[in-house]
Each structure stands twice: as structure tokens, then as C-alpha cells.
Image (tube, rainbow, N blue to C red; front, side, top):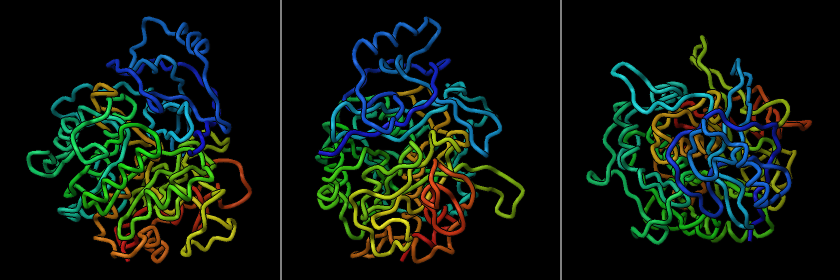
Length: 448
């Protein structure tokens, strides 16, 4: 079994408000508890004590949201601090994963928009411009999203997002959207608000990157790596050549077995979030068979590109994209950095900082339009970029492609995600841990 997820400590306070409605949590999921570097367990008395702090003025998103804490988070690209919470809590059992989605709590959810209103956060047009992406590529390609638990509102929320931004319809009826369980059927798992928010973020980010792509949502029956891994295998069995995984947990000596069972799929681009706890490595991002996707802060500026990026992170560690040296995984042949004898995380990156976050429509975890972030945003976005680039070679590991074309990426050279003495947590010219080789500048880096 895999080890429990690590959790990074933060100064915290209760959120001023979180969005309705109420939905119960499930094992290894639900709303937010911050990562610390050593596994912990919360006792029932501690939870009851936390519940006593809740006043009648709070709107509760899920039962466990009453115990959620809020991070005060600032970045080099954000003049003021923002308040966030994570949608998935610490797993209580070894082998369980947590989703990597983060929601802004200092911004009021927009239940509906006026005729001339636009959602807060970056939308598809922004992202396509920032990353120089074609609007018409990827037609007919299927990007699979693997998540735990069910989002009953996934299809209708996706429809609202795409309608808002004038993207083509993507529904079951026109064959663009398909939702299945990990066995390939329609016996969907128990709904969970935290993972539902994750699912909304995932399908919206695929839509933003590749509006012409088909979307396959594969729902694992639990957040256990065995179930999530079965869902990955099912996605490949269904024919998906691009599979996004926005979750992670602590590394384990058993990870190399899981690599062969779930992630060794030649000819399939599998992307994985690098983590939201700053400097440190998670699994399955550490697998040598996947593209580990880090995160940036993205802002508009007056440059020729029109945008600039820095590492998503803070000088004190805190929240930020994961990076570093794996404890167990063999270094793939295409990685040439010298600071790690084993696998280095990450490979590439895109926007993940909730302070410069993404517009997402979600009516199960939340009540409409919110601003989300986390490397849960960057993994599905990069999966969509791979789809724009075209079908991978049948025997290839597509994680190797960017290493053959580093000049086709935006090199991120500023910021850090924690305390270390070198490139493993600090951006600089060329390869670095938090952002890998860089962010998309068109699609040329994501093909052979």
C-alpha cells in the first residue's frame, strides 16, 4: 500500500464563508485539511472542538467544511493576500490519494451572471493567448479525466461553462462527453463534494485548452490508488490517448509496482499534478511513465507575449507546486539534471496559483462561478495541450517529448516553492523543479 499523504503546516483561520450546498464527505476525500510534512490523524474530540467554533453566519459547503481551515496566501504576482481552502482532506488510511484542487474563499461565488458580466478568473481566451494555443486543434481526440467519487452535476456544469465562453457543445447526446465508472459502466460511485469540485475544474480546463476535444470522465469508486489506477487502465481501454490525474499522496516503496500496474501505457500521454504543498515529491507524479505537471502564477503584462509567469509558491514554503527528487523512482533516460540520481519532479507546468486562478463553474461543491487553482488545474490543461499536438507514437512515453524541444517552451526563471539551495525548488534559466522545462508556447514541445 502507498503511504499516507504528507501535509504542510500553515497559519490558519476559519473561512469567512464557503458556498452551499451541504453534501457528506467520503473516505479519503472531502473538503480540506492542510498538508503537514508528517502523516497525522485527527481525533473525534478535535473535530468536535473545531465544530464549536462555527457560528450561524457561515454557509457550509459540506459537512467537513465546518472543520476546514483557510490559507492566507500571497505571491509575487498578487499584490494582496488571498484566502483559499483545498477541496480534499487528508486521507485517513494508507494508499489513499487527495485531489489537488484549491478554491478561493475571499471571492464571493457568482450564482448567476448578468448579460454583460464575465466570471472572475482566467477563461479559455486568456489561456489560449497566454500559451499560444490553436483554437481548432484536437478535433475528435479524447482526453480522459480520472477522479474519485461521483459528480452528479458534471455534464450540466460543463455545459454552463462552455456556453458562457462560446465553446462547442460537449454532451452525451452529441458524443463529445462520456461518464463511466472504473469498470466501464454506469454504476457511479458515491457523490462527494470535494471531488465534484475537482471534476468541474478538470473538465473545464480540458475545455479551455482543447475546445474540440472529446472528454471521458472515469470515476473511481474510492480515492484508493488501486481504484484510481483501475480507472486509469479503464480510460486507456476506452481508447483515450491523453489521461489526466489531479491527485497525489506520499511516496512509498511500492510505487514502482503501481507504475507497472497503472501508468506504463506506451503511446498514451498521462499527466499528473505535482502537488500543492510546495517543495516535496508526491506519487504518482514521481512515476517515470507520466508527465509531472508543476504550477505557475500567471499575470498579464505589457511584454510581447502579453503575460509573465513565476513559480507558484512563497518564500516561506507554504502552498505551491510540488517538486524535488523521488526517493524510489528510477530517473528516466531523457532527464539530464544532475542534482537528482532518481526521478526529478516536475517536467512542465502551467498556471496553478489560485491568486491568479481560473474561472470554474460548479454547482455541487459550490453554487456557481468560483476561482480555482492548484496543480489540479495544470494537469488537465497540459493533457489538453498534448491532445492539440497530436497522437503520440505507439511505443513512446510522451513525457519525454518536451525534453527534445525545450526551446519551444516558455522558460520560467523566477520564484521558488520552498527552502533549498538549488534548482530543485528555485526557478532559473533552463530546467528547474517547480516548473520543469517551462510552460506551453504553442504545441511543438508536446509532440515527437
